[in-house]
Image (cartoon, rainbow, N blue to C red):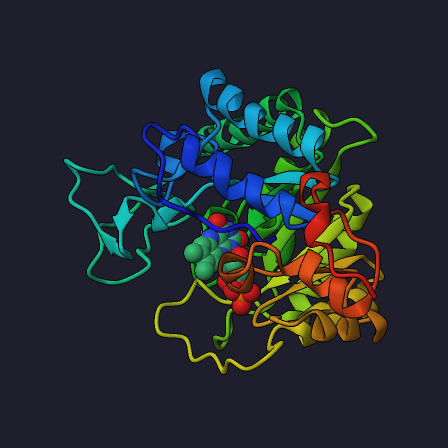
Length: 332
Ligand SMILES: Cc1cc2nc3c(=O)[nH]c(=O)nc-3n(C[C@H](O)[C@H](O)[C@H](O)COP(=O)(O)O)c2cc1C
């Protein structure tokens, strides 16, 4: 299950909706459930109703979901740690007034859309604080029992804003060269890794390309993936887009799989593929062709929480099915 914001929290707290939402995917046999983009600080949320993990109470509510998944299913459960940067303080993709939202932060004074407020440029000291926010969030996630942590480096949010030369025009050690633009992400990766033990995996989601001239591209992603591997990242989850308003994206079944394939095969890292993968056979074919190591499914698993177990009935493979439901199991 790919991470998906549900915009249903108050004060960043998971509630009954999230318990049922994630719990039901575990009963559907999902191998890995990824909890939605979760803000590492209040300004890291996209909206006022996004999930957060900047305090202990938020982690305690998440722990209830993790415990249910672990005791009542065979699913693994991860959490995506995120900071929205200049794309925060919105509702329905539109920026909300300052009084209802907040001043956004970014590597440079470039808004996502010209009509939006100019973001505050993070000072070097503030960048270090953001790294520390990710580290503290990881510590809480570990305490809550998550099996893995994913750092959200895609879709034009803060980490991506640093990666791209179109949104990052800094002249200090965090901007300019490729090495400087990836520094923020690497510092987060290293800080988060300090909180993990050998049983907890670390993923990074990236946008393989941002579909813009002189922007972040697939060759940058391959180079980044090689470095992430050296920094003990276990898997690169390859999505695309999100940083450039109005970028032209051609969307078709499995449209982002070639990015995953290129990163996997040129960087020699494990990758995840995502984007219009809606059928079990399609997912299996991607794995068999060596284009990815893991398949993330988003919208289809909203439509069908039982996608995995249903697929297993069709392929006659073993899959977790709640013992309470045994009488409904389709036999071969
Ligand atoms: C409702 C919704 C919320 C999403 N929220 C997130 C998110 O929190 N983090 C993220 O990395 N991607 C997010 N995405 C993107 C999905 O994870 C996925 O990459 C995208 O929908 C393409 O996969 P699909 O074709 O299977 O839906 C979201 C997508 C949807 C539909």
